[in-house]
Length: 495
Image 1: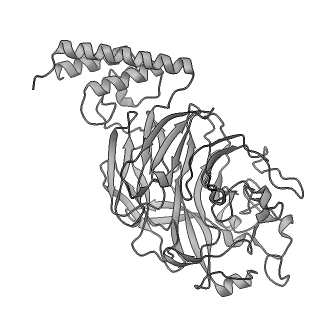
Image 2: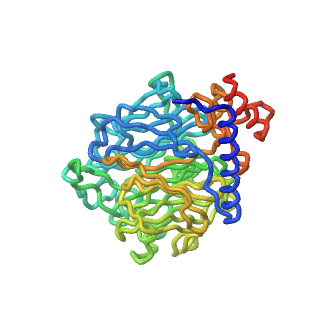
Image 3: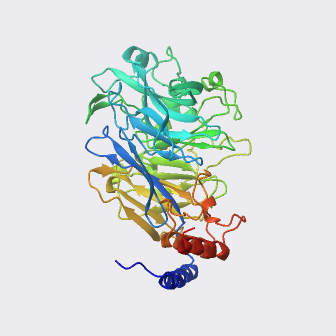
């Protein structure tokens, strides 16, 4: 095999630069560009969710920049941190409450796949499940089922249990502080059981008119489990996703079973979160805002229902288009049609949410929506990108796409191996990672300098894209033609 000469390489570089310029010009004229970044996801084995799996980080050209092998399958998507470590929620081999989305384990991996921290919550009363949310302070928000027996449920006014276990799995949110290599401290906690209402027995706790208390959950709404694919379950509200708003210090949750999203106050102490006063909102741990299915709190009917089995509820970053809005993947289970909805919540200056007497929370309609020939009855999600595009995951089809604000599909990716779901995929900007142990010029992260890195750096320059520290080859604080020249010289000379 004949190696290419320096002249051949220079000609190829020139050709690629002209090609990239032409492609960039077309995109500029159309006003639509994909967001250059790293796509991060973990395929979940569909027929054996507890078995081992992999985590993938794809580069702008869909190349595998890094991958991690994990012993157990995920219960939702992992999260990549700026320091290049990964938080991964997974399904433990013997969960104590074995429902859909069951987890139990949580670990942190470094870039090379070494386990830095691993813990679990899977005991007689609590079982981690579904989503997590890493916080800016290094802590993690987690969702767990909280087992309640029949006596506890009936004492709160529950009329009927719909499962042979004669149990009711409520919900709890923990803020965990990792300690050592396998421990944690519970910094904050919120229990759904503290925020219930019932209208059947004035002698029992929480009696009142449901429609007059949208800040509370009706304990008699919905089924409490039944027989699932893994046997009897007592799952009730089925929270599946969690998102955190730093400026508001609030938490958003999505409920598949009730077809609602909820916002609660995180600025409370744990004792305040168990009550109805305190925190920035003055409402303690009560629900500040809910949306999607007003019949749950008796301010609407089935005709007013907008959400069905929602997943992937997130706040849009305040620096992105639509900042502060809520983005929801609406699975549309009853209608066999999924969609992505962006809504503008009626937040007030003091961080509470306006609701008029006798009517549901606004808005009546989404600010933006995207739908098409896709449907996923489970998992899935959507995230807004800095340029206004939205990355959407169709879990059961192993399909990820990026759509523009006007609904054009600009990029798509199919995980080709059958037998997997992709719970959710996140796209991070090229300058997201802050780790400094990188090879200057190695834009695609394959630990070698070659023509592919030149293509990447040319695209960065032409599209004025965000960039990793390694793209600044000459370390002058900008990425420009000087970095291309230096990178070409390094490749040609082998220095």
